[in-house]
Length: 516
Image (cartoon, rainbow, N blue to C red):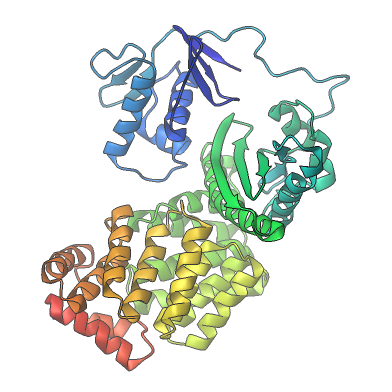
């Protein structure tokens, strides 16, 4: 379906905006925002609507939202004064007010023959990975694009909370111009991954896109350019990156779907999906809400391993952030983690939760084993990878910690927890006495999330030890604002630093910054 307004043509399927015969370049978020406004032109769109549709619920600043709206206006020759097409409604939101037509011949192609009965969606996120298109112009390169698709299917299939269509079913659409909605109906899925591969000598370019067919929106898209030194290594790297990026997007999409359901149809799955939508926002209040929703899910299904594991992880994270007393959090989280493992020993979240508990209970070997088990069950679990790095750092293995934290960032660079991973990498570099890099990483963490208390802590200590007096003083002020109860005694008591020398150097950094 395309949309015509004035002399513009908006094509969501091709992701193109044209004015007459001129293609207008748009950033992905700006294109998604414009498309959402045009699709919902009959109503005023609120800020929350835009966050859900374009940013998948991730909290962004008012200036970021305003800049994207202004960019959409510029693309269609509008501005904030004229508001000819995109109008701001005071204290309500924005609305696309231009006259829109949907040209004939743009509807989805009809199915041949008798339409088959629509398959019911399973109770898990259902996804199909289409065979990636070979763009190399050489038929003998089909094996490479097919291999990419198959690797993604295999990797997704290892994540047991997804319902993944088998390769032989999704590959029947290879080379066929079939509309995504038809594919979704025929396979009984909500999500479709599609992409292309162009192999040229020693270079390969892969594009991939995740579509929510029910809403017609694009949840995620990426392009990868790589040197082609080893075909299998390239396949592994790209597959790993795509799966890691898709996973949190699917959580977010499912959670917002659940929020639209009436209360009397909620079940444990819906409650967990709602909880995840708050969990990924990484704020104190959102974690409180997430914990309440998870408790309700567990009341409905006491053997729901994922809910129990997520609850235990949330308790430990809130304590680590200083939002909850550690002495209160540990027994609550430990009880949830052990219940999660009893319910489903194969759930990575359960072992992730127990790894957190054991870390802050100073059972270091058990903590490392817990995170390693979580990563064995789901090698693409960026959060477990990041906190494995934290455990390694607290054990004094700073090189391994640095590698693990950077791996978490690479696995999920758009993860709402990326600031945490940068903070963990910063702490690792602090332990390695590379204070300049520790400061840089901590500042990057705080650039992404200015309220991340871990970033403030590492920045304060690293600047103190590095002799950057002004940075240390300012960082300590921000740390006190984010964590009013912080003190040398609190750090010594609650931060599980295994080696006395590491702990003393960390405390010394805070002393030099002025903490008492």
